[in-house]
Amino acid sequence: MKTPTGVSVRILPRRLTLRARLTVIYGGLFFAAGVVLLAATYILFLEQLEPSGDRVLFEGRIQEPTETAADPRDLDSIEIQTPEGDVLKGPDARKWLVDQEDSVRHAAGESLLVQGGIALLVVGGLATGLGWLAAGRVLSPLHRVTATAHRISAAPAADMGLHERIGLAGPDDEVRELAVAFDSMVERLDRSFAGQRRFVANASHELRTPLTVSRAMVELAMHRPEASADLRTLGADLLALNERHERLISGLLDLAGAENEPLDRQPVDLADIVEHVVELTADEAEEAGVEVTEEVVGATTQGDALLLERLVANLVENGIRHNERGGWVRVVSGPGADGGVRVEVSNTGPVVSSYDVAGLFQPFRRQAGDRLVVDRGVGLGLSIVEAIVRAHDGSVDARPRDGGGLVVTVRLRGDDAAPAGS
Image (cartoon, rainbow, N blue to C red; front, side, top):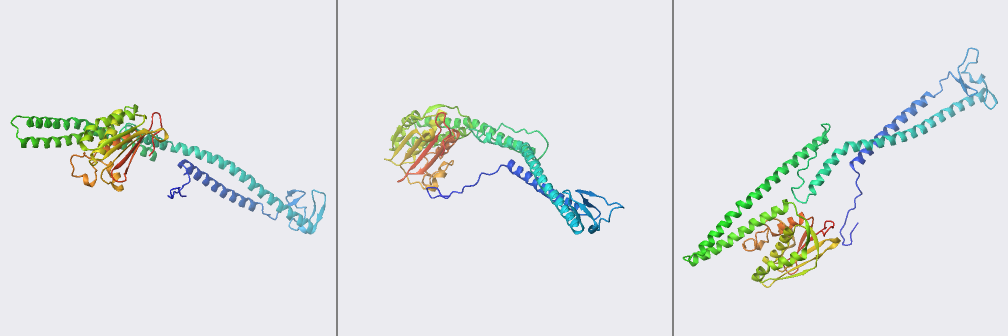
């Protein structure tokens, strides 16, 4: 079928679960075997009812011939009295016997088919029900594997939940082998993330401290009375480069923290955060010749206030730095759809191609014209935004603005609301 926008959508039927498919297979095989058995029994039964030539039917009973009785094979000389009291002789007696034999065979065969079919349906239904129970018992370990995987993937941070293990006990079969392999994989991931956390903690000290010391030494050298003009110019350039490195390290630590640290969720009004961020970035915007405006409506979400402030600050700073003198940045926040909250930051600036937008959320990715500009950021702003949004169970998307610039929209869930969709 086609949607109102003309996009073709293929509607697939709801799939059967593995348990249902196994039950259908069990039941189908049982019914097939039952039909074959019933057919074979019916054929053998009819063969047994074929006349043997040494018995005769007399007054509704099959009687063995005796020495004094007439030869049973000479049916024309037999005299028969039917259950109704009629006396038949010769060909009439013979015809009556044949009809009685055919009637008995037909009734016996029909009775076998009807009663056998009913028995097959009853026993087949019971077998199918037992197959459903057996399949559920066999597949129950797989449900544990699936449930554990869902809990790990639904963790708010990348490494939260990796401490969980399936720990499946039971026979050493294929399902237990799968569970053991899954536990081994999760254990390796847990060790890897633990090493990453240790690296981030060490990098915070090992990288920031030397930069702080070097900045202090440069400032000290610049402010010495005997410092020449060339030395002061070189010191200013070194301080700008040092500041860029500090922003790079801070961005990397913010990115790692947003992805790995658990959130301290508290009710946060985004209007307060937007107003605070606009006030903090006022000097940078004035220096860049960019006007920053805000349109805020009270909207509360559950999240980490510091991370959400970093999110809005990165969007505003990104709009200021990737702009042009005389341009503007507009921040709009308020309630969104489905009880969520929304923050939208739009700005003027260079034209952005639609195929470049997705790459802007990747670390160290910038527009082609920004690759050699050292004072516009380090290429981590939108990556940090995406990590913070993901940690808050939200969504973020960007699109080029007509006339140049970018429009970035962040959707978060409201206070006690379901996760915001994209």
